Length: 334
Image (tube, rainbow, N blue to C red; front, side, top):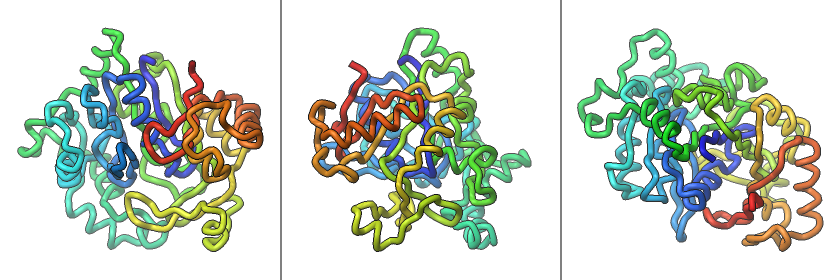
């Protein structure tokens, strides 16, 4: 790789967890660093089990991968411990940077009571108020929480030393680029941070010249939760008819749906400097693709769609998801 960034192309829900879990197994990742916070869940299906993770990196299915939570992340302590138990990972393989900030119960209470939550439709998990406190430099950090002592790490040093030693590193972005506070558009219907590839690297303490690939993750149709613009939005009834209706893994909220937007796909690829692309849920648009593991097995119309995405975005689609499991994927790198 050796250092790659995973970034969502649209409003989240693109299937980043699937791509990360596949790479964890296929490329035997040395490090996976999760950025962001608990307002985004990454779904991993493996060996018939479903995991919706808000804190633990999606690469957990490889027991040899060092899992880290970035210095720029916001940690919900209860969620962290719940997911460590859920995934049954060896506690020695996961660490939290000592300078990651903490989401407290008061932040969730403030979030749920705020006008912003009611108007924009945040997750209510306290991320916005916690970020406000961090900006004011009054937030608690991971090193201030006694029960996290056994998990404290210097994530920034570990990752950069790993890169010096030629180790493979995946930086796990959360949410989608179009929710970026600064660059996404549709303000104020955005999240409380930048969600672009450069910000993901910054949260993890990785300089831009150390990043080898930016993998932008598309879904074959677009979805978003909460309020805000969604070009080409269709009704819930139409989404159900097309097989596009989804419920958010993290909050249980209905996802709104719209057809794939080539112009937005091109824009997000350009701003993020994408070098590779992934397309998930191709089987939702072309059902005969389900479970395919070879590009040659795809029907003509599916190949034409992938080719059009590549032509109009300028990004090669090297990963194609054809089902929910981590290994239901076509890898075109070889």
